[in-house]
Image 1 (cartoon, rainbow, N blue to C red):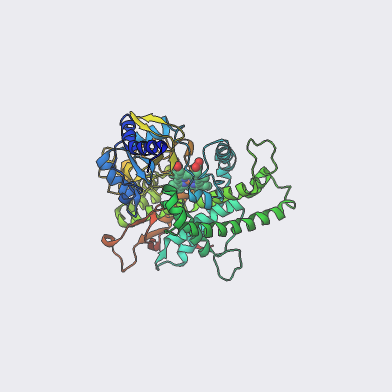
Image 2: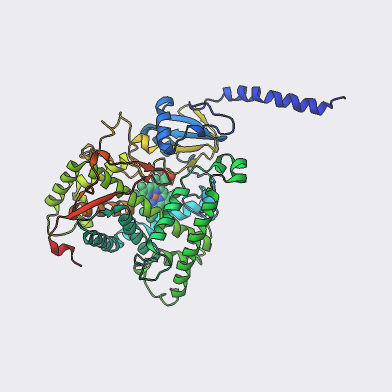
Length: 511
Ligand code: HEM
């Protein structure tokens, strides 16, 4: 049988492909990294805690390394110098986010700010956030909410004094209460079975935990679409759809409630309005560059509520966990509080600038236990050259904060929890000192860090001022496990339980 010339030509091209690819890629200087396997790339090198696996790999391949997840190139920055290059010098190139299943299925088709591609819509949202919703003036106006919720938290803890307190649940109730009141105007949940509400606190906390987990997982379909899309053998797609439906139902209820009250409350000034009220006015705003749809507003409210709840609660939980493991640090914190505040009152926000040691504890917790351990995923908008390495458009960037916090060129004995390392040092957490980047830096940096810092500091300072904390009797410091679970925020695997003993006069714990 005669073989047609087109078939011979096609076969020859196919056979030549690997050689052409080799010749072509020889001219490219990619960052060093492990050899990828066919189909899966380097997925087999990722354990259940990817930031740990990437940290180990970076010790072999260096602070800028390249891996492949499926066929997608992924660059990992593991030092402060590398982070500065990607998030400052080349910030404009790496400001995009990849289009993932989580962004599509839990963020109403990338309507979410967290997963939004870089462009006019994202810039508009960030401007609204920074100049209107979380400007310094607005943050100050929300102070009474933070203080009322701190007080409520202290009273709840006091109510169970002498008994073990599940701190994770209490902290997430605290942050969720603040975020609900700021964003939605009130708590649309109930923490008592006797009070009827759209949702019970526990169910709401579980929904948020599920959302956080699903937004941080490595879903195989994002990297090997033909494999993941057919099978969903990890079960993530199904779970994303379920959690998305629950949140949509919840926010539909909240928005309808606001819309029905809108007419009646038209007269209120801005100081009295919450974020959903403000957002609803944007629906009719002709001056906006990018028109806003109902779905976008709903997803934005979801971003704020979820973005602010778990991250902040986990940061305080990690700080308290390290303090329980290091009682001498807790003692020094109490000494500072006694000296600056005295025992006759609670800590207020105006006291925060004078609490240098508590501030150092917060920074040390953020260094050692960054809740956003690899930041959000960034994506290269174009081809570029970084430190002489060729990086292709579409490459994913991960900045491993876990590695940054363990760099022994920067931090002496990085495994020790030693807040003193920050005293008298100009190391800040606002994206300008690249050794410590809990909120990221540059165009995708957390837009609400000032608000988060106030919540953390006033919560942590009052927890330490109001109570002396110990582990439950059957636990001891040596066996205390600080294992983690990975997600869009890295939380403790086993929620923290502590036993509080009041430190202040009895009358301060009365309503
Ligand atoms: C301790 C508390 C918090 C931490 C550690 C934290 C950390 C972060 C990080 C690391 C990012 C991504 C940066 C990047 O990808 O380069 C981020 C993004 C974001 N955060 Fe926060 N955050 C916290 C609290 C909050 C709060 C209170 C809110 C809302 C009120 C919030 C809303 C957001 C939003 C909307 C984004 C997406 C920004 C974008 O992609 O452009 N976060 N946060």
